[in-house]
Image 1 (cartoon, rainbow, N blue to C red):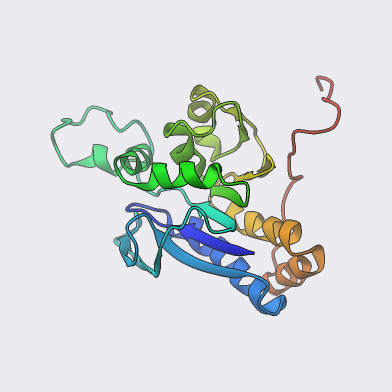
Image 2: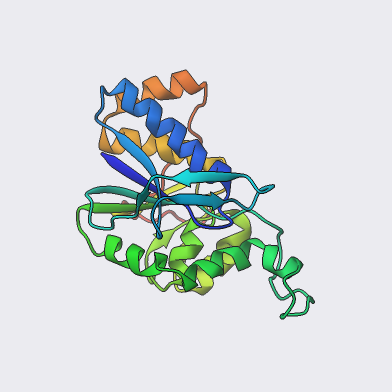
Length: 226
């Protein structure tokens, strides 16, 4: 399993690094059955996160046709509406909101690359936190089941997505995770699903982190109202 973690300006570092660490450990535990790299829609470059100017360097260009997983993190920044009273012509605080930083990805090559990835049966697209909103705002998640940070579930639902309040949602070739730290759970779930439970368990023990919650899938009988 090869995983491409996609960085964009304003990304949340923990959204990207948590699954990267888990998957890198999975590579060691599996004897190289897992590969993971940081990529961007522009190729190798320094990508500035939304957290204190921290930057990470991507080593490659996102290849939407490479079999494996394409993983999209969310953004970090101020909470709230990007049009919360600031002058729209000002480069002030309205540009620092999470939603504004996610929306700016729509003006890059990323949506087209993600569309190509989602159309390739050999590729699973995964997201952490607001990464699902990147796909949703690009019109790529219509009628799909997905989750995101709990503060973004209403926005996700408004885009035509079946928003699910769960830690991890497996919708086949789309696997999404909720709030920031759920990137750890997403990484472990991908290891279990694609490589095997023994590898995932070994990494879970190494990280002293127990996966939380039941992974939601669109199968089985619908529950009665509780």
